[in-house]
Length: 95
Image (cartoon, rainbow, N blue to C red; front, side):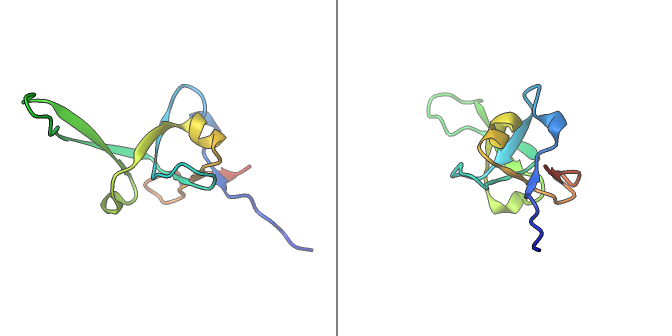
């Protein structure tokens, strides 16, 4: 008999209320959802000095590049797996 385990899913309490997660594109089944961290930097828009933009990163791996922000419920609907690193969702469980 073989035992199969489901990949870790986002915590249920995040799926209502519009909580956000960070994902790397492309958005596809099996993508990994991370806890988002944000940085602000000047936006390179000619003629609009003082404009800023927010950059979204994965909390567990800021050096891996930018992410896109999705609601947790949409990421779960798309089949996202939760990152189980301590900085993201160590409480994620298989459901």
